[in-house]
Amino acid sequence: MSPNHGRHFLQVPGPTNVPERVLRATAAATIDHRGPEFAKLMHDLFARLGQTFRAEGPVIIYAGSGTGAWEAALVNTCSPGDRVLMYETGHFSMLWRDLAQRFGLEIDYVAGDWRHGVDAADLEARLAEDRAHGIKAVAVVHNETSTGVTSDICAVRRALDNANHPALLLVDTVSSLGSIDVRCAEWGIDVAVGGSQKGLMLPPGLAFNAVSEKALAASKTATLPRAFWDWQSMLGTNANGMFPFTPAINLLFGLREALDMFDEMGWDAVLARHARHGEAARRAVAGWGLELQPINPAEYSNALTVVRMPQGHSADALRGVILEAFEMSLGAGLSKLADQVFRIGHMGAINDLMLTGSLAGVEMGLARAGVPHSRGGVQVALDYLAVDSNAAHKKAAE
Image (cartoon, rainbow, N blue to C red; front, side, top):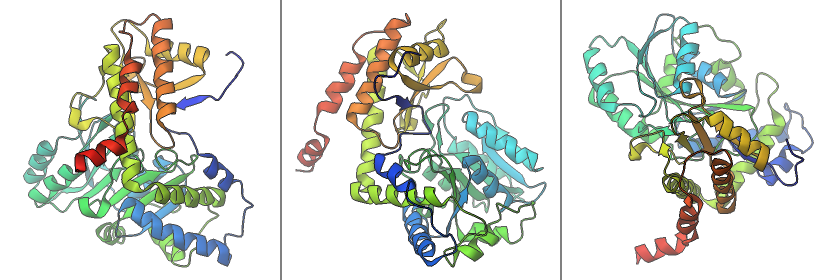
């Protein structure tokens, strides 16, 4: 690579850019995780995370990744041989399925084309057929970062309710939390799986389970083996602001700072910013004459944009050119989409100039790599972003 003469653009869909305020917070002196100062911190964080997930039950924090939170969701609610219904929406739904199979769970995995989200009508029909209620849980990925598809979790909940089925609803919100609307209580999510390194604007290292009362009840009879991921041991010490193991103390400092920033910005404004950036990125793609991976506009993700390459052209070669020439990292295509797509992350700590700079890097890269496209996609995004969104909203309200 050429010598770095500026700031590297990290535009992968996680880990995302970490604000300076959060980085400084994580650099504070480590404190005693058995002392009163730490207990005060944790009581504050537990209460605020409930608001973040819009959950009525507890939020459990682990030192780990989203994969660990996946495991915790399953081992605390299921027993060996339980049936779990899952939908193939992309790479991460496959990984969650593979993890579940390792625990001896029976997985009903509904095949998908990696261009659509969960089919709520199909789900309702399958649940209605399960008159003996053999399906213990439905596990879905809210925002699939391998495809740029966001599934309608509200519709998923309606499917469960319409079928009058008691299955638990487990939802991966790793890349939607802090970027796309998540409403655990309102949508009847029994376990929401989260991670720190995406919309929450933190480094990797924290994993979350937001747990409903129904899921807590299920955990008391579930028999899958668990130790580190056991909710009951966590909740017993969390009540006193403590952990049964050494937590990621400095990341928790960063979490407090990130939540302060969200409070200052306002959650509605944060979600509106992501929606605006998602629309700007999609308009740029249309301006280039390229194709999005998701087909249904109602399922377009506001956290990232996944772009299909023209036939015969390599996404990895394009990404390599952009990294070498412009010092910007884009997301690679994963498993079935390897070398076929590139992914532009625009979640977390990002503003208009960062987004347009990223889009400019893509357009220059397309030209340098000889990828067929139309010029001017960046200008389309600029024209869209140049409009004062606040003023537009005020005018519409009048």
